[in-house]
Amino acid sequence: MALINNEKLRHILHSGWRGVCPRCGKASMFDGWLKLAARCPVCGLDYRFAHADDGPAFFALCITAFPLTFVAVWIEVTFAPPWWVHALVSAPILGLGCLGSLRPFKGWLVASQYLNEAIEAGTEASWERLNAGHDAPAPGEEPDQDRR
Image (cartoon, rainbow, N blue to C red; front, side, top):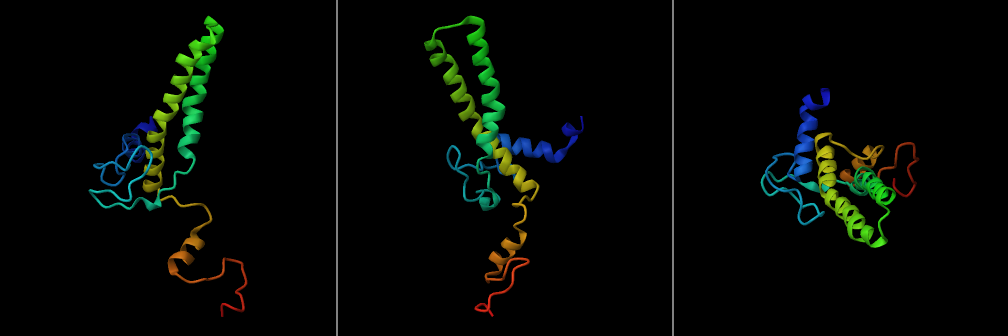
């Protein structure tokens, strides 16, 4: 019951699954099927922070394809249909199920990254060096003689 009452989770699920901006909730965060827009046209949120990478594909395989594979196996074991039944029924169900769930999963991951202010673990110092615009040594690294 605590998950349902969690306002942050509810907002992540709402904006992520609907594919709308996690800040304003009005405009689509997508510019195409899976390509993120550069920024929200309503509130101007810059989507460069978002790095969903292989996350949507992982969740589509684990949450969508895995159970649908059991449906295909159940059809085979229970009814023993010819191969063409699987080609006409099982393959399209798996393909459409996985492709159809990629966008909601990507939206969910982008909304989660925004609301949780997520960054890659251990990269805070690297981001600071990049944003500072100079070549400071990494933590624990000796400065080069050439840099001084």
